[in-house]
Amino acid sequence: MDTAAARSRLEALLEDLDRSIAILRGESPERDNSAADAGAGLTAHDRVEAALESLERHRRGVLAALERIGAGTYGRCVGCGHPVPDGRLEARPDAARCITCQSAHDRSR
Ligand SMILES: [Zn+2]
Image (tube, rainbow, N blue to C red; front, side):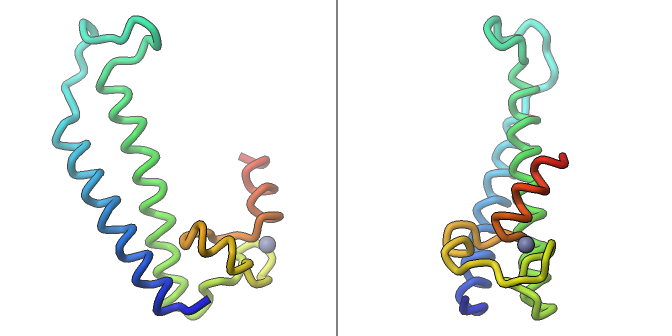
């Protein structure tokens, strides 16, 4: 994996995430139970919070990947130290783990 290409993809991702987070923050309505969604039982506020949380988790992953580029460890699994397959990095430039370590990590959560 070419780290210069990875860096520019990650920086573009970060910009997109920052923009989406800013938009969501701007639109986040005040908690108002009268606006509760009858079906899900979630208020618009809760849905925005959930979306923000997932965007911010993704953003932290992207920042961590940029740090790994800086540290020269990008493309190496943070779990086992083996290279993360290029195909996986193509699909997820912020991937920190190989598929084996990722699924073990996901199960442990
Ligand atoms: Zn691994």
